[in-house]
Structure formats: C-alpha cells, structure tokens
Image (cartoon, rainbow, N blue to C red; front, side):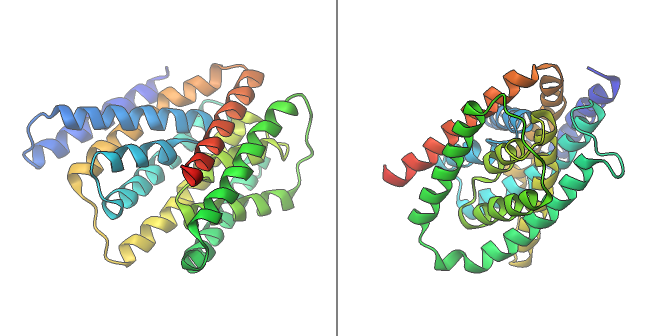
Length: 277
C-alpha cells in the first residue's frame, strides 16, 4: 500500500479521535461495531461498485434507527467515500480521470445524467406504487447480472447514448426507491463497453454527485445529521477506501467481472424477494 494511502488512514483515525474528544464521548463497543459494519459495506461498494446502501440500510433499520435519521447520513457518507474512492481508483490506475480521457467524459456524463434523474425521481416518487418500482428494479438488476455472466467474453461497443440512458434510469430508481443505483450503474457500464475496473471507479464518482444532490435536498427540508451516528458511519466508510482500490488493482479482470455479475444477480434477487415476502 502506498504512503499516500497510509497517510489517508492515519488522517481518518486522527479525525475520528479528535471529534470523539471534542464531543466528550467515552470509548464505546457500539461505535466500534458501527465503524466495522460501515467499513465492510463500503469495502464491498468501493471494490465492486455496489452494495453499500442496499446492505447497510436494512441492517441499521433493524437496530432501531429511523429512516429520516439514517438515510441522510448514509448519503453523506457515500458522498465523501464516493469522491475519495474515485480519486484513489485513479491514483491506483484502475480508472483514468485525466483531462479529455474517455473515463473522465463518461464519469461527467453519468454524473450529470444522475443528478437530472434524481430531480425527476423526487418529483414523481409519490405517484408510482412502491411494489411496482421494486419489482421493476429487481428484474432489471437480475437480468443485468445474468447478462454479464453469459456475455463475459463478448466485446461491447461504447456509445454515448447508452451512458445517458443508464444514468437516467439508475438515478431515477435511486430517487424513487433508495436503491438499485450501484448494481445498475456498474453492470450497465460493463454491458456498454467499459472495462470492469474503470466501471467501479466511474460509479463511485457519479454516485458521489448523486448523493450530493440528495444531501442538499435533505438539508433544504431542514433535516439535520445526528453526530453520534454520522461520525462512526463516515469513519468506517472512509477507512475502507484504500483497501478497496488495492483489491480492484490486483484482482484479475475476468474474475472481477464474474464477481460483479454474481453480486449484481444476488442483489437483484434480494430486491425481488422483498417485493413478495
């Protein structure tokens, strides 16, 4: 691991200890467990481009946290970890965000489309039955995962219009249901001609902008963050970033694509199960 990543880990630990001292909080196994949980969920998300909110939200809801207390905090942590992850993915050579590169243009296009999709989704959310939304999202995600596995050795042609459609659908789904963004965005890029390593870094970048819009909307409605939840969640998420970029850097491209295919399919089936169970 590079010195830059080690310095990042040190800074996050120091920041966490500083906030803890300022707030006068004693050591808590609960906070440590929350950090470990968020670390694990974000490690998966930053490594494979999906799974953070989908996994973390139901677990924390089961522990008694309220949705309006939880969702803004998760969006904020995804905002910070998304931009940090995209930076370290670029630094590790997993994605090329240099000026005028295809990856940077794709990331910008997906970020813009995602922000537009979120705004549209927020305005129509109350008009669409939740059951139909979850069913629609689950089917799309499952089919995307199966398609990546079946078409593993096929070379796809990159098209700008594919990126526009992908961004709008993925962010629209996230605004309406709170999930489905990462699996759709990552698998959709692979099926549109982007290699799997770059798709993970691009998804992190685009999701950062999507979460930025979400955080602004929540703040605009007067929603506040709870420090006792926010600090451990953000700490765990940010600590995972250097490890995830190292994982993506060293894993075989074909193996990474297969892992993404399997996880996408599992998350799709999980979404469908929540509709019928």
